[in-house]
Image (spheres, rainbow over the protein chains, first blue to last red):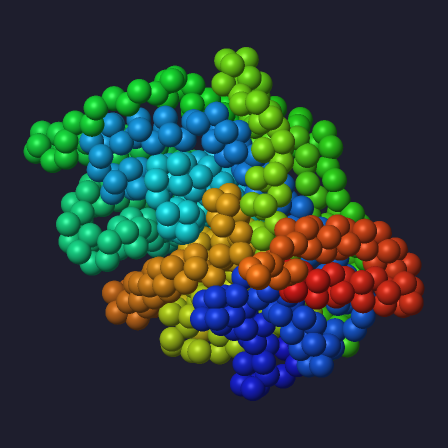
Amino acid sequence: MRGLPELQLWLWVVSLLPIMVVLILMMIFRKSGGRAGVVGWLSTLVIAYLWFGGDLHVLSSGMLKGLWATVWVLYIIWGAMTVYNVVDLVGGFKVISNTFTRLTRGNKILQLLVMGWAFPGFVQGVCGYGVPVATAAPILVGLGYNPIFAAATALIGHSWAVTFGSLGSSYSILVRLTTLDPGRLAFFASIFLGLACILCGYSIVHMYGGFRSVREYSTTVLAMALPMAVTLFLVANFVTPYVASMVAGAAGLVVGGFVVPRLYRSQGVGAEVAAGSEDYSFHVAFTAYYILIVIVFTVYLISPLKKVLQNAWQIGFPFPETRTLFGFTNPAVEKYQSIPFFTAPGTLIFTSALLGYLYYRAKGLWPEKGGRMLVGRFIKQVMGATMTVVTMTMMGVVMMETGMTRYIAEGLAATGALYPLFSPWIGVLGAFMTGSNTNSNVLFTGLQWDVAKLLLLSPYVILGLQTTGGAIGNMFAPMNVALGTGVTGQGGREGEVLRRTALYNAFQIVAVGILAWLILYVFFPGLD
Amino acid sequence: MVEVQREPFRKRYKSEGQLAAFILMWLDFPLLYSGITSNNTLVMGAGFLILVGAGIITYYFS
C-alpha cells in the first residue's frame, strides 16, 4: 500500500483500537464523550507514532487541523442552544407542545414521526451540517420527550436524507470524484437510501416502544414511509437528485401532518384535546424557528445570493504539506476547511436567535434578567458537548492524516465476495471520523471505486453503498451525537445516545448490505 | 455536629474546568501553528505538550 505499512491483521486491529476504545468507554462504561474522546485521541497519537510513522510535524498538524475543524460544528451547537434557550425562556415550548398535542389528538407516535423523522429530513434537504438535529431535537424535548430519546430520534430521523440533502452536496462529491454516469449513481443511491428512509421510521417507532409499537404503528409508519421513499426515488431519478431529500421530507410532512391525522379522526382513534390557557399563540412561540427556516431557505435556495455571501468572507488557514515516515502524504492546502462566514449554518442560527429575541422582547415576553439566565444555562449546557467534539475531531483528523483510516478501509476492502456487505461500513467509518457524509465520500470514493474495479463489481452499486453508509453513519458519528446532546442540554451523556443509535445504524447497514449483495450476486450477476 | 457533605472539586468546577481546558487549547493554537508553518521543532514540541496537557485537564473535568 502506498504510504502505509503492509496490511497485516494484528496491525489492522491496532489501527481500529482508538475507535473501539471510544465506543467501549462510552457505550459499556458510560464515560462521557469528553473522557472517551481524550483517551481515543491520545491512543491515536501513540499508535500513529509507533506504527504509522507519524512524527511530531504530522501529529501536530493533524491535531491543529482537528481543532480548527471543530469551529464549524461548535458554531452550530452554540447557536442551536441559544435559539432553544431564547424560546424556552419565554415559555414557548409549553405552547408548542400543547399545540402539537391538540393537532395530533395526543398521538405521541405521530408527533414523533412528524417532528423527528419527516421534519429533520425536510430541513436536511435544504441545509444539513447539523441544523436538522439542532432544530428537531429541542422541539421534541419541548414536546415532552426524554432529551436523550429526542436526540437519538433526530439523529436517526435525518440520516436517510443526508446524501441528497444540503442541496445534494454529498452526492455531488461522488459525481465530481468519478467519471461515472451521474444518473446511474443516483439510481442505486436512491434505492438504498429509500430503504434506509423506511427503516429509519421503523427504528424510531421501535426505540419508542419496542416491537409492540412496531406492530401497533406499522401502518402509520408505512403511510408516511412509502410516500417519502417513493418521492425520493422519483425525484432523484426523474427530476434532479439535488432536491430529492427536500421534496421527500416535504411529502412526509404533508402526509404525517394532514393525511394521517384525518385517517385517525375518521377511525375515531385518539381524543380531542381541549385548548390550553396559553398566553399567546403557537405562531408567536414558534417565531424564532420560523425565522430560522426563512433565513435558511432564503440563503440556500437563492443561488446568486448564496454565491455572493459565500465569497464575501471566508475564514481559514493555510497548512503546509505533511508526510509520514512511510510516505503517506497530506498535500499543502491554501485554506484548510475554510468557513464562509455569511452562509455558515452557525451564522444563520445565531441571526435567528437574535431576531427571535428582539421579537419576543418587543412583544413584552422576555423575562427580567433573561440575558443573565441565558448565559448561565448556555455555559452549563454546552461545555460537555464542546469537549466531546474537540477531542473526537482531533482524534479523527490525526487518524486520517497518518493514514490509519485508509488502512482500516483497505483492510475491509480485502473481504472479496463479501465486500458488498462491508462496503457501507467504510462509508460509516468515514462519517464516524468526520461527522460528514460529504467528507466520507471525499475520503473513500476513490478506494471504493478501485475495489469495485478489482473485484469486477458494479461501481454504481458500490458507490451507492459508500454514500448510503456515509449518510446512515451520521446518526452514529460522535460529533453529531455530541451535537444532539448539546442542543438538548445533556452534554456528557453521549454514550447513552450512541448506544441507541449504534444499534439502528448497524441494523440499517446490514439490511442495505444484504440488499446490495443480493443485487450483485443473485438478482443481477454481472451487472455493470 | 452535622457533617457538611461537599461536592468533589472535579464535579463542583466541571463546567469551569472544561472551559479552562478549551481556552487553553485555543491559546495554544497560534503557538502550535507557528511551529508547524516554520517547521520549528522546539515551538512545535511546546505547543504539542500544551495541547496534550489541555486534553488531560479535559479528561479530569469531563
